[in-house]
Image 1 (tube, rainbow, N blue to C red):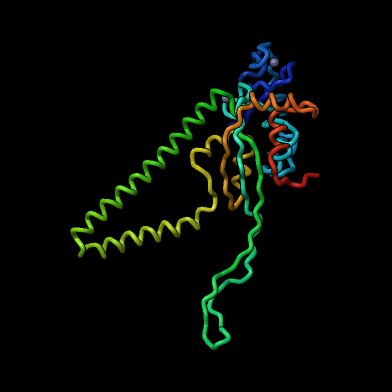
Image 2: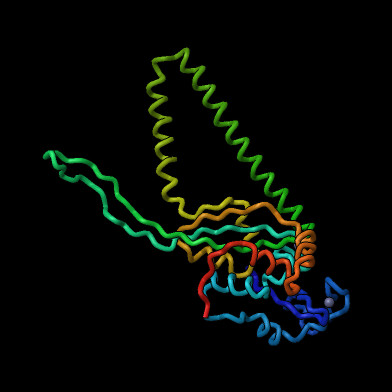
Length: 269
Ligand SMILES: [Zn+2]
Ligand SMILES: [Zn+2]
């Protein structure tokens, strides 16, 4: 993923610029005034992160809590427009798994042996962060989402058709059924075994969207085992209304959401 560069406009918004635009003027997406892009060295220095010592996931949590980039309200996908939609991301990370005992054959009181399954105790941590999208990018996201769910529906329909075909076939050719049954059992067993290797669970179409959020790809890469899922999109234009109605000090919709969601945070000094 290419490094991203930003210049701050007088209106307080971030304006995304490219390295080759150094020394030129660029229009702010929000107030449309032109912003002077500094030289390449200044650009590179200003894109450096404020928390070089933190782990990627901690950087995500700190910037989210403070409402700093990448969670300052700019669309994560195009990074040229303000976000109108917030997609809550729930990330469950395996922190530790203790093995109580390994299982195996154990003697019983009656002089026999019994097989005992291995027992493990797991500790998971839940983290919430948002994917922020502008109205246009959100349309693209929804299209991606429905494509992915249609694909799954077709796969299930295909599997069902295969089962029907097999049953019809088995009705007429009972001799071959044993061989085929064994073959399908083998396939099932392989699929069942495969789930234990799949330790990073998330819907494939989400990967490219999450990669747009700074530090998130790095954060996911270092984790060994996790489940990731998303909730319904929140229309921020309505969320802003709720923020304005409340008596608490004015806050950004992202910070508002972050305060509402029950995350288990890292302790950050
Ligand atoms: Zn501006
Ligand atoms: Zn966008």
